[in-house]
Length: 325
Image (cartoon, rainbow, N blue to C red; front, side, top):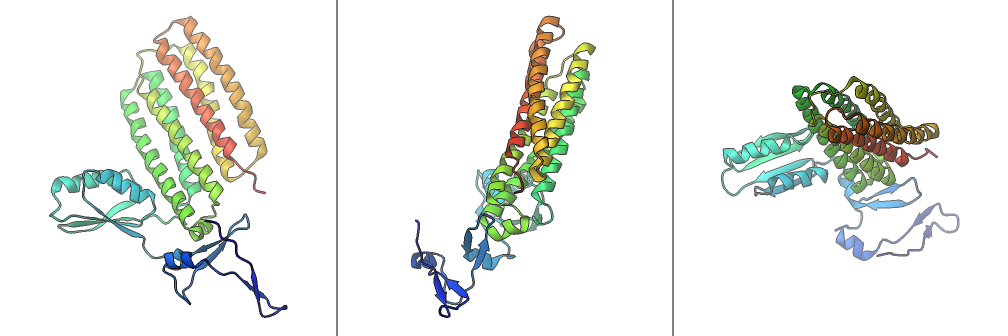
């Protein structure tokens, strides 16, 4: 509902204060009373946000859930919504199996720990401070891990090392955990404007960072797919042609993510040009694979297509970058 309010000036014509009347229904819904403080936040786009919840900033955001078969989904939901404390309760004593299931679920999330427990309840707390472990740090860490995964996945593809393939899969779990943490922080920033100010993230940036993190996660998933497609032998000629393509993809990813936080139009143009080159290189490589008939062409073509999709994801990240003014 849109409410139109006229600005009132207090203190006569020379008065220095201006005020508006808040909608009565909204005040009632928020259980506000005369004299109770609210926080007014000025956004970069000039809008003012009146947030009654911000009087409680600094307090622990807590919620309770019951032990049910969908416990994994419930904890995931509450974690991503930004709750600091999740209290898991049961009307009957919690069994050892239920405790083991809970311990397994929380391994998916960064810094979600069991801090208290008894026969009928377990308290989980997220120990991450968003003002210190920033979205920028998390995303750059995601990028470094994903890049290493791609390089290692290609080494697995070249050499057929199954042990190294398992390491790539383990790293993907780390990327997933960091992705969940970014989603948690961005959702909190959108829900709590004052937190958004502290994190120096605008609502538009929150949406862009969420998409960028998803693209990085997609690149990591593609690396896992490559690592799981082990061949007995790859020709040296094919390896030689693949290596510069891999380096190009990694360069595109690095430039794109850094450009999200430090915009440079030349970097955007560079990524766009590199994508054109990548499309041309992968097209030629497909023709080489089909004509050479070495190894399993279907697997080799899949790897080439995966590298191209990684480059496209990097280009999509570059498109999200915004100038600082």
